[in-house]
Image (cartoon, rainbow, N blue to C red; front, side, top):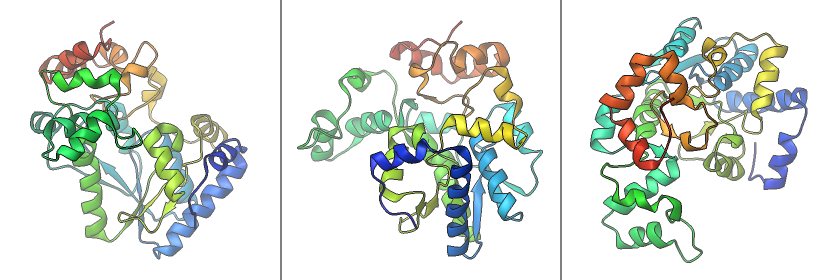
Length: 296
């Protein structure tokens, strides 16, 4: 079982050759599977990372269930690909994306920034509000100066979208079926995911929400090398120019993408969905306010 990981240890693991990473990942999966007596499932988004994860897991344990959380925000090509995979449960959230943004606000910049903005504007705790505005005694927890202008935005901002549309349905599914999740996230994906890996390692057995991330020390290049080496089928969305295939309308990280970003591509590949997102859902006005380019 993994314990806390030091930053230099993560870098060492990330630099290992793929065959070593595969062996380490299989060991983490085996530990997780045996600890829970096989009562586990793979969270399968249809993206390349979870596709590789499912390929590895089912190479070891062919009968492990895969679960696709059907938010309604996935690219059509992702949905088509998921339908080609056997033994997948489709789980829907209770709220739509439109209902989430109307009640809580839009997902912009990052989960951390959106959370901090939302809490600063809605909390009844003066202590928490001061932390979000000015930081704690060490200067941590505050809204970045770069994004403080969002406090005055003519729309609400929050990080609740992922929680309501994926995390809560996942927790409910796991509780109902008494299964523990295995997910394909990597420490490379974001600072928050890196921090979680450093704190828990791959297998968070002792967490209040036990979770396995056996690919945590992989890099994106490892994923594609694995796909090529083992001839793993994947969604054709990646052959259309997309590098990431999360929720179509999510604005997390768009400001950091190279052009053409996901919305530029969507304008060409899925014009009707693009129009609905930009104009009907109001994502265009949000990105205009944030200075994010979304039109070709």
